[in-house]
Amino acid sequence: MKTLVTALASTLLVCSAIAQSPASDAGASPPAAYPAATGQKADAKREMVVGQHIKDLHAKLKITAAEESQWATVAQTMRDSAAELDTAIDKRQSMQGKATAIDDLNAYGDIAQAHVDSVKKLSTAFAPLYASMGDDQKKLADEVFAHRSPEHHKTSKQ
Image (cartoon, rainbow, N blue to C red; front, side, top):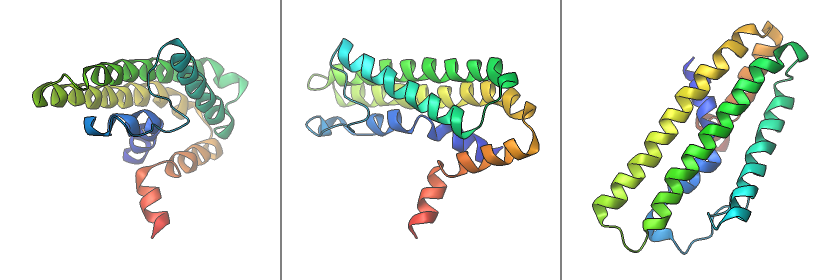
């Protein structure tokens, strides 16, 4: 289960990469796949990125027609979590240049908490789907998520 939680956490990796950058990096370019908040156009692109991630994960997990209703819950949880994390990130970015150190730390704490909450919600939403999968599909899910975990990336670089 620890591996599953770690793997599910990595589904929000794109969002957390932005959240982890310190306020002093305001001039740095965000990852091209996930633009900094600059209005409706950026929001639409964020939604597109999350949607593509959901679609890719659906294909990799080989979600069956019988699993679609459970998958819909997982996908909606991913969308909701991304939106909540975006809100926390946008709030922190809007304070740049006028936030005190305490304000910045609290805003970062809000981002970290949104990330933690998202992982827990995603794990809860994914558990029934995972339980309903056949052994071969569970093994595939384990492999898909293991390749996405931070531990895998550390191991594969050594």
